[in-house]
Amino acid sequence: MRLALILSLGVLALLPFYTQAQEPRANPYKTAGDIPYVLLGFMSYPVPVTKEEYIKKQLYIISREGRNPGMLDITDYVIRSENYKKANGPAFATHKYKDIRKYVSLNPDGDEKLTAGELARLAGYAFDIVDTNKDDIISEQESTEIKPIKDKLEIENIKRDVAWSSCPKMKGAIKKKECLKNHGIESGIEVIAVFIGSKRVYLEFTNSNDKNEFRERVKPWARSFVEKDLVYLSASSENPESIKSIGITSIKMNDFPWSDLVWPAYNPDKTEPFAVLIGKDGLIKKTWTRQPDLKEVFGQVDKLIQAEHPKIYTASSV
Image (tube, rainbow, N blue to C red):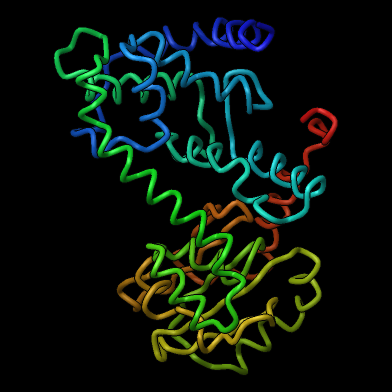
C-alpha cells in the first residue's frame, strides 16, 4: 500500500512534464523493431494498457532513480553503482543499475541527461507504433504482436549479462575475445569494458607509429594515469595491428581485439587522427578530430571525477 502511494505521488509530480511533452515532433520509431527495449516495458501486462497509464509507469524510473526532480543523468548510474560496489563488492555492480544507463542513452540531444519531458515524448512515440488502431489503448492482440520482439531483445540482454560476468574470468585475451563474440558482443565500447574493466579509457588513433614519441608523450604523466584510473591506448594507421598502452598491465595488448573490433567502431577509415575519452560508465565523454595535449585530456578526466563524486549525493541517500 505504501509503495503504491509513493508511486502515485511520484507520477503526479511528473505529470506537468508529461503535458509539456505532447508537442508534435517526428516519431523516431518507424516499426516496433526500432523501439528500444526499455520502452517496450509495461506494454504487455496487464492488458489492456492505456497510453496515459503506460507513460506514467515509464516516468516512474526518473522519480525512483534520479537525484534531481524530473531528470535522470549518467551520474545517477555511476553513484548508485559505486555505492552498491562498496556495500556488496564489485560483482555485478556495473549491471545492478544498467537500466539507468539504457534510459539515459535515450536522450535525444546527446547531453547525457534524460528529462521527464523527453522520456514522456519518446514513450508516447513508442506507444503509437504498437497501438496500430490508434485508439490510445494497447489491446491483448497488439501486445501479443510485439512479444517476439521483446523476447528477442530479452535473450540478447541475458547473453550480454552472461558475457559481462563470465568473459572477464577467461584466461587469455584471445579466449576473452572468443567469449565476447559467442555472446554477441562486438561493439567497441563493450569490448574495451570487458578487457580493461571499470576504468576510464582514452583512445587515440594517429598517423605515427613512433614508440619513442609515445614514451616521451606519456612520461611526464605516468603517475597521473594511475591516480586518475585512466588507461591510454594508442594505435597508428601505419600499423593497425599494433597498439601502445599505459595504465594497464593485466592483459597482453598484442592479443587485444583492436583491428577487428575497436578500429571499426571508432575510426573505420583508419586514416584521419581521432581520439575519444570514455568514462567508467562506458559512455563517450569527449571526442577530438586531432591529437589533443594530454593536459587537455586530464582536464576532461578531472571533470568526470568531479561529476562522479558530487558532495550533495551520499551513500546514506541511496
